Image 1: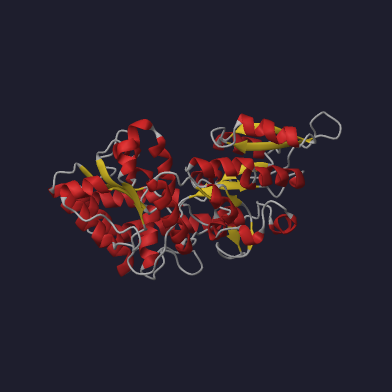
Image 2: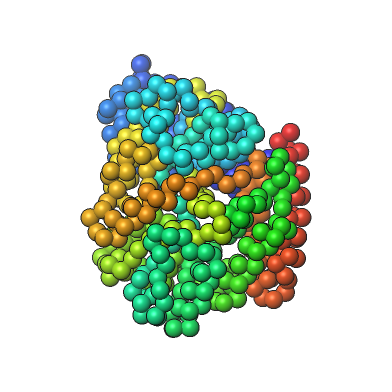
Length: 427
């Protein structure tokens, strides 16, 4: 696929050779492209102090700069990215199986199933060799709820052990609104609704792509049901949509400020409760399982982590940096912060459990990870390509201009055009 389309997918797929020398005899330079908010200067210094034979040349993550570096034949050795079928199909990432087999830090039996997002068997994502590792994660469709607002409205909170149905979510949202709650339920609409729709469809036993991943299917009864749910959510006015977005661009401030009763934000959201101004909400907050329409599937729509380009000049040194970042002290510190779940089971002992909401969320997360499975991912199209088409279509449904069936057909037609173009470009 074209570089622009691939960048939109969040998985950077151009690759080349790295500059290995540092100018110092016996010292290898590893170029790391990541975000400084995630891979800090202090972490770089700590790694170099413990590994004097490796110097990290840190480059701030930027799609355009990465593509320019790749084109110039001087790419990074370790890259921030999201797992992508296109990345794997183009054979641009290094398989990590042999490194893991010899590692004392990252072991195969310690990898949680979320890392399967980075597996590719040559045909589909989810099995086969590992081509990257998850930094940290959360089941994205679990719901944080402020039980005090539910009680105030006379509405039973969501169960913290058994999944609600998606229909229950609408019913509770409607009841909360009728009781005067201004923002009953948020689903982080502004971050995209494509992943949510796909999860709903797969929970019903259907797929949005054909078996060979070359055609879309958004006209099945299962897909139409999911589109109709999104339309109903918007028409009921129970939470923000792209037609009435939150100024903050996310649910966080509204929820921690005590205005929103529930938000589909996953475990990582607990990191926001440590602020003093969120203490009252934290005291009555709990995490509920991902709702379902049948099979329990709790999707992880990110899976952000790191990968090593196949054309790297020094993969061994890059792996040592990766080991440190994914399984070393930085991973321990991330776990302690409560901002995400470790992708290594052994690190879960570091999750914060001092507060009741932290203890409850950790217990729920441990149960929820059993239902984390990779959703279908076609190498010929990115979700960022078709998600805007879906959003535009659902907007027309909310406004009463089109039916769910009409929207499904239009988005499917557009997806099939993009899929055909992507297949031609991939070859």
